[in-house]
Length: 221
Image (cartoon, rainbow, N blue to C red):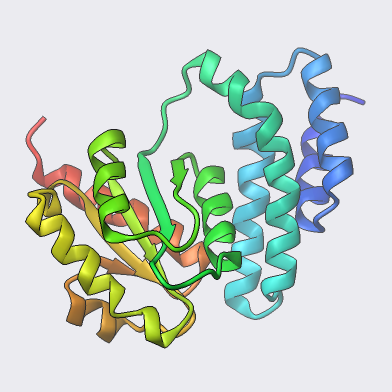
């Protein structure tokens, strides 16, 4: 296969969520001495962006997004160490977790894959993450953005508890806070004092980039 055919194949197979084939094509590309960032930026990311666009149009639904995301995640496992070696600059660092009391993670995991595909370094704290764990992780990793995910209406008040914990620790101004999850609304995000909210995974990537650009524009270099 030519490099062009490999890139086209990666794009097409990621779109339909054919994980084994995506991994095969990734290996074939690397065997041809193709640059890992070429595979990522010229095929995998555009494919996932198309998945997001189709989701927004109502042509794709959550299952299609999930299988495409998983297909890309397999390729990312292979490419991540190689990309680190080549020193590809990340867009920013995103710390993510499902709040205390909540064990749902499908949405969060999908968002993580989309963020990673868009060039973010993602640190996932998992589920049932207590406010003090978020605080400790922010101190350790110094992310640009922290994301709180909740699937249950009963755990949504943890957003405010987490933000209060950040304020108490003197960290609130050092990070952008994003919230999300099935029952969450823009109004609720505003009420708890979050910086951003997104309704789905592809919107999260756009919002995260916009918030970072905004923040960086305010901070003198």
